[in-house]
Length: 296
Length: 161
Image 1 (cartoon, rainbow over the protein chains, first blue to last red):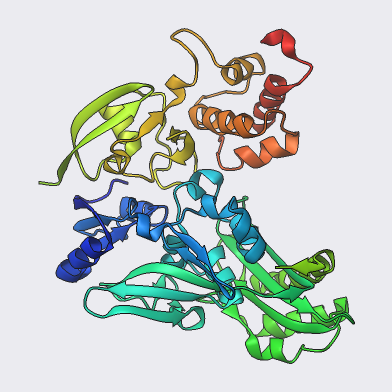
Image 2 (cartoon, rainbow over the protein chains, first blue to last red):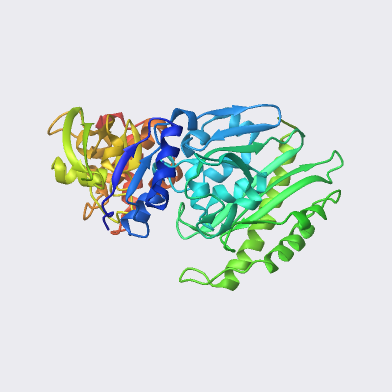
């Protein structure tokens, strides 16, 4: 349970880090909060020969916002997002998801970017980023900066569209404007903070008559990546979200999930759980939208 | 090869060492400094026994390489009390309420509870349970740990100050 030997470089700035990655290729690995990488190295699932520490890069720790988007630097600690008042106003789903991410002790180190690039199928932040329609800013020495939508970013368990020489530098989260916006996140795990057996997230906006104006939702832990269902969501627009309707949609979603079995839960249980949790977050988000007359 | 120099302040004392870059902070504390109060349990961030304060924030010391803490300040369970031979309020409450059996999880539990009462001086039982949900006690003595924190933070219990 000890990591294999490696060389360590503390990057002075982003350019420095990207230069090293470009030279070293697959031998090198970036380390930020280390809450996924260090355990993987301890178990020797990962054994990079060079570790490039980007923890002290201030340019990756900024949070900024314009009218339509919040931009969160990839190295912003999960705990700092949790307690960022303005982010809690503009992207409340993020805070709700974070309360399920590990424990305060891991969130004090773990970064938003780290959770996204490790892309554990049951991780909360990948699911929240998909539901919110986030986009990832990836940068490399050779190819410069490119933007990848969350929907195209997660490719499989612990597998994303990021190249070996790239660094996730920032995440853009679209801001929903207007009244009656609500969101909810929930999951079930063996112990609070453990990997979820299934998770569900929803953000929605209702019209004045209570019908759905906009809705986005997804489930985690039941497919090789967290999954959103834009086609099913589209069919819900302009209809009122009754408990029966939520259950009906959740059942349709559950049918499209193909979870594996393990010692904690069978495939059948996980699928049923995903449906139950999804119906629950939809109704919770609806309730939240009623409380939030005006959400900015 | 693979060695680095670090300067880390631990419980108020500055230590300068040459170490392997792969050495985790918990191994640094135990093996380099002889501060064996911090326990290494699962060594992959699950059990919480190795919890310490890094720049006053609780973290898992098994999920950070010591070199990453270069220039930072660490507080371990040995540093929670004001002086040698003394106990912090929460440590005293652990004794009073028998909140440890084998003691393996205790340093991590103390760090978790210490941080809890720093932010929430009078927590509810539920808040205590939430705070210690990050730490595993294999003796399953959770109830006594909750009792101890409530005892230490009882607003009416000024008598055991």
